[in-house]
Every structure is written in C-alpha cells, then in structure tokens.
Length: 596
Image (cartoon, rainbow, N blue to C red; front, side, top):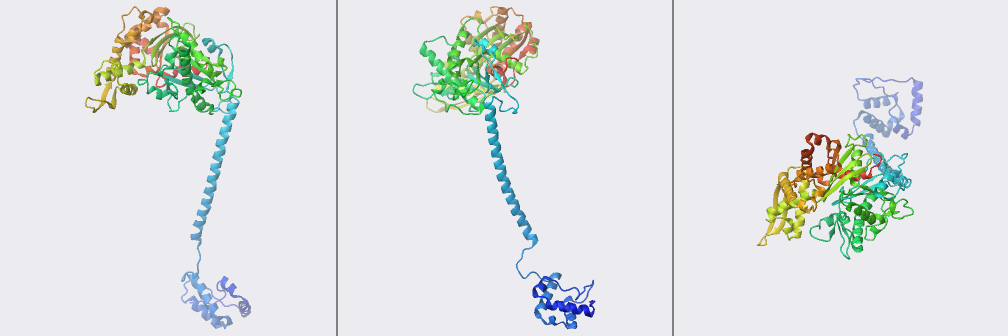
C-alpha cells in the first residue's frame, strides 16, 4: 500500500507553477520530486503505477506529456536496478586501474632516467676526485682528509750505495722482485698500510720471468716465452743473466735490454692499475729505454710519480758474484728512473725479514742486539740460506746453492715420466723438443696439484707416435712418495755434481748428502761453523720462496733441521708462511716501511 503525502493546496499550487517552468534538462538532472511519492518500507504496489495515479488524480497538465512520463519511469527503473545503461560509459571500477597504470609507468620511467643520470654524475665525480687525490699526492682509496707522503728511506739507499736523497712520491712505492723464474710486484701508498701484490694482465699474482728477442721480430715476454723455454734456445732468463760473469759490451747490453724489457712491461701494467692512468702508449721495444718512474710527472711526460724498489740476492760469503750482480742490476735499470738515483735496492733476506715483521710472523723478536734469524729462500732455480741480525738488518752470513730449488721437483717429475714412457734415463736424451716442453708443462701442473694432494694424475694426449705412426698418449699417476724418491736421486747423482767446491757451501763434519734432509743439515751446520753462532740462540728460521709451497720441500727442511737441533726447536722456531704469502713475503716486505 502507498501512502500519499499531499501538500496543502497553496503549496501544491506553488509546486505546480515550478514544474511548469522547469526545462527538460532540469528534469533529466533530478529525480522524481519527493512531494509526489513518499516510499515506505514493505510497499506492495508498483511505484510507477502509484506515480501515474497520483499525477492523474491531481489533474496536472504535464502528466499528459509522454516524454516526461517515460523519463520519470526510466529514472525510477535505474534506481531499482531493473535496466542497464542504454548509452556508452565507463565505470569508475574500469577507469581507475588504467589511470593508476599510466601514472605508475610515467613515474618509473622518469625515476629510472633520474637514477641513470645520478649514477653517471657520481662516477664522474669519483673519477675527478681520484684525479685530484693523485695530483695532490693523496691515497685514492683513503678519505679525502688523509694525506699520504711516501718518503725514500736513507737506510735503504745506504744498503745499496745509492746516496741519502729523500723525496716524496705521490704515487707511493713499487717493489719489484725479479726472481729466477717469476717476477712479482707489490705497491704501497703509505707506511701505515700493508702493501698489496699487483696482478698481471692475465690475473696472475706473478709473471714468468722469460723473454725471447728474435732479430727483426717483436719481443715475446712472460707466459708466451716460458711456453717455448725447451723448444727455443734463445729464450732468456734475465735473473740468471745478471748472475753470469761479465761479458763483452755487446753481450752486456743485450742482457741489460732483456732486463729492462721484462721489468718495464710488468711495472707499467702495475702502475696503470694502481695509479689509474694509461701513459706511454702500447708496449714497444723502444719504450723500455724510456723513463717509467720519476719524482715529477709534469716535467717527465709518460712517467709515474712512484719510487721503484728492487730486490737482489744476498751477498755470498765466499765470492763477489752478488756485488757484481748488484752493479749489473743497477746499470740495467738506471734508465727506467728519472733521475736514476731515486731507484732503491734491498737485499732479499732483509725484505723477507721486514715482511715477517709486517705480518707478525716472528713474535719472539724483542729488538735486542744478540737476536738472529735464519732466512731460507727456496727459489725457482736456487736456494739461499742467510743469517740476519734483525735490529741492524745486517747479513752476517749467506750462501747459495744452484739447482737445489723448486725446479728440482719439476725436473724429478719429468725424469720419472721419461723413464716410464720413453724408457730413457734423463730429459737430455729426449730429442723431441715439443714433447719435452709438454712434459715440463704437465709436470709443473702436477707439482702444484701435489702441494695440496698426495697423488696427481698426468694426462698428455698425442704426446708422440709409435713405429707404425699411431699416436701414443701418456696417462699415469704420480704420488708424493715417488716424486720425493726421484728428487733425492737427483740430489745424490746430479745436483751435488754442480757444486765444484763443496767445502765452501757444505760442512766437512758430515758426509756427502744423499737426500734433501741431509743436504739441509750440512748447509745449516756450515752456517753455524762459520759464524760461531749457537744454534739455540737463533730466534727463528724463516722459510720463503715458491719452492717452499711443496710439502716435500718443507718436510725435507724439517727433518734436516731436526737432525741438527731437535724436534722441539723446529716446532718452536721454524716459520713457514701459509698459502701465497710464502712466495710473496719478499716483495711485500720490500714495499713495506723500513721502520718496522
């Protein structure tokens, strides 16, 4: 039932007048007037019929218009949800997600552009800041308020006889360790930081110290030259050349050129990495004769403001070869520095001692006058033993034995392979130089593997051919025990034959050594006999060098020293740096401060 709410006559008349004056647009914009129908809950009749009856009962003139009746009916049906739109429109539920996607896309796009621009500007800022630090002698990796002044040590110069000039190098110090097999480089910006080893272009922490200089052809350096060591007799080893007796002027200049080439190439790469600039262009044969280090790069174009520090072998107690080596070395590298006197030289045992102090490997040192340290450097081609007084950095005794080194292990491995595969007694009997080179390369890898394992597998396909021209492949295993036995055989039969005067290097109190432990015992006994130093007054035995990475070598040294002074002494005093530090301690110590 519908209740009709009628207005008083006067109000109805006024409303009637208003309805007559309304336009069709106002009717479209408004719903049915409230005074016409008042809906109540639970209504039974249809609203539309009630509307018609009311309009008809009041005798309103506008009810006769079909348009207005249809419009009122349509609006009521829309409110009741009985019909849908009869025209195209988009609801809020459909348009709002689209708007959100558009706004989000625009925001992401401009945010990304802003981030890219900010990143580019930050990189440009860091590059300019680095250039500023280098220009003002600051450490590029340190905060801007930390200034680094690297001074040349007068003590180091006195060790090498280079004078007492003190200079400040904006690019820090660069130590160069020219070993018998590899060259290593370390760099330091300040004396209060540990130096860092600089990797080469192939990512290696050392570079093979080999060079091939064919007439009229490009110079071949590093790993490429090392790969031809046993195929080409013209492959040179600069460290061994410097140790050779004085030659004529032409031969000496060839040696100097080889040394400069190897150092220039390795040092230039290291300087470009550490100082962040490429100078001097690509490597060439003439570039090695130009200065690379200087005090003032502005007055010396294509140079770096860094101080070079070179290591050299310890002086021998029985010969003047080391003095000759140092003079030859200074002459060879003099043209790499401008002025030449900024170059510095430090003995390898002293550099190893400084490195041990840097890494606190010798905690028993108290800085007293009666302290001694034995430095045993097992290099690639030779082994040296030196007695050093830490407080004064004075070498009291030193001796070097050639061919007792890390190379001995490789030679032993190659000899074992040749015996098993070719039925020959030594590598010198093999005429196939390419096969010999492959045997040495595989043996070097096997020695590295045996430093962490007890057995290594060696696989060399197509090593040679048989009588019917069929390929033969080498595939065999090698254990530490077999390699150790082969090495002791070489020491007994071949290595000691190269010692022309055994009394100068070995003790006469012991019989001729037959293996590595007995050789170490004789060497140490000779040291104590010559210096009159009590073995138990030694504060430490420091073992360094690439050859010392082999457990076979360390085991032989341990047994040899134990036979002389006992196991307890070895347990307390023998120091072997771990990992790569054992072969990098010399170059790191050379780059460290002399105040350690």
